[in-house]
Length: 401
Image 1 (tube, rainbow, N blue to C red):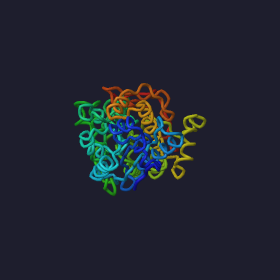
Image 2 (image 1 turned 90 degrees about the vertical axis):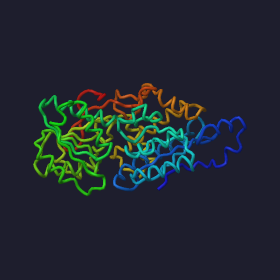
Image 3 (image 1 turned 90 degrees about the horizontal axis):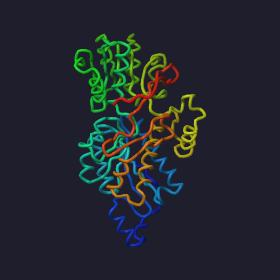
């Protein structure tokens, strides 16, 4: 599947003046009228629900182009399906770089997938911006010098908050964790270990699943047998729903924390059973359009207007579309700051110089900041609890760093 903007600018570069043509030649994916960017998305495969992120971002740049684009150039986002398979991510990313000659890779989804393409992109001097993953390793500047994390709080930070909260309630708590068997899941284990320290091996029982597994029922039964009072679900939506439902069915009622990438009411909490999810804790960093607190909020109203016009087929209960809006808006700010210099060097310079950027769909008080030594745009979250119908936020903003 391929989503792209129809710009009608083929051949336009041939008619610009010589100085502009020379500049464009130094800026891959850039002409006098166009900025080409690319991404891979799981439009098919086991987590195709996350393809909503790409659809929302395509819609955002369609809207932007109707308003004149960025500094006189239209943004051509080429969004390719990788079926959530890292080898396919590599194949499609190579196509984007070598055939489509994109200026940068933006918001490609998946921890393993972004890991698989990182060295290749570095070798081609292609920025890897606002990654569709909360894996904290992408903040390691030595390992990923041309990447920024996405506009979401890191998984490892999230897990630290869960551990601190649980220990504040029960200092001797034992933990059970179900996690995806990859870097996504391992980041939650690392965050727990950061807080538990030397006690980790004696108080944590963990089980993993593969993305292709049909069910995780046996793992949940095993975790209940550990006697843990705290249950951390570090899973994507399908498996998160299974974990909630199975633990409820077998009468296990520990203090439960749910990864904030799997908190959707329509695709996780309802399939799991609303009663089963009542009382579960998670964190938020974006406004939930279904939260009555935002009924009259100008940011949410603007988002709904955008969604209705530019992504009309979308489920407006799906917060993937909120994340897509935030990510696209952050990239817009970077590209605007670049002016007419869209070289890799200047794109990266501006990506690492974001100061107190307020996005209308981030929670109040959360601002986007980066620097040459800080590639984590968002590091704050607020706790929330599921009340059987919706998520209720509580407490102050917290950071897990």
